Image 1 (cartoon, helix red, strand yellow):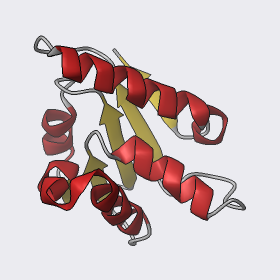
Image 2 (spheres, helix red, strand yellow; image 1 turned 120 degrees about the vertical axis):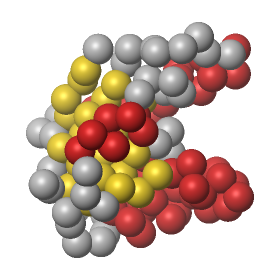
Image 3 (cartoon, rainbow, N blue to C red; image 1 turned 180 degrees about the vertical axis):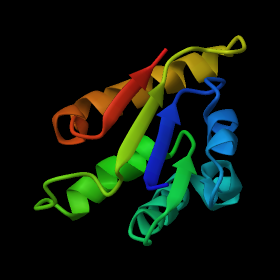
Length: 122
């Protein structure tokens, strides 16, 4: 196993996929008490840890953007694979729909940098 990030909007199966991959899995949901910026900063630190690992959650894409900002000379993202899930498994609330659109916007902002490792799954 390598260094894998799993992203996507709420209810797309990120935790379920991470569980099937096994190994050391870090869930961004465990960081909720830190607030959004605190969670993102924690995930950026996780990205610097040696692998193998799987990091999953809605904060991952914003952490990757922050990592890119903090490491402007990094030619590649700090993961070997970025799996972006798009298939919504359960209905989303209006807030979750808005969050999904925001996550897609962040992804699109750094898509060129992510391209070597990005895999979109429906």
